[in-house]
Length: 95
Image (cartoon, rainbow, N blue to C red; front, side):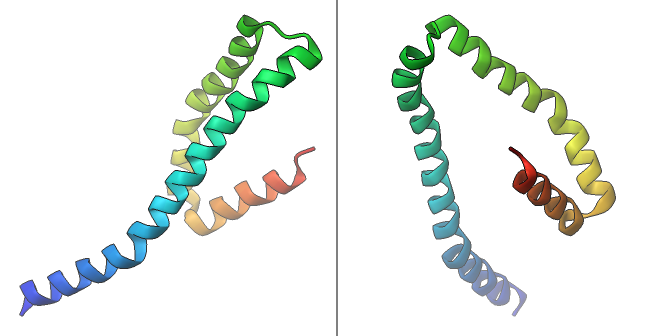
């Protein structure tokens, strides 16, 4: 009985979550590609060299790298509901 219930639950989860995760993966891929396309015209318009654009992109990576662990610790402490609401609220307030 437990094996049958487990199989049914896993099948239901797979059919509901996997398509959504695939959609999110596709959107993230489009977003990464879009940054590269934006760099083609943006660098020329504002006078950036390829190395300065790469340096700027690297700064964002290091910021993410440094703040990811404290963010996950805070997520564990405050709970997902509060932490995601905080992230969403600060994203709306960004200029």
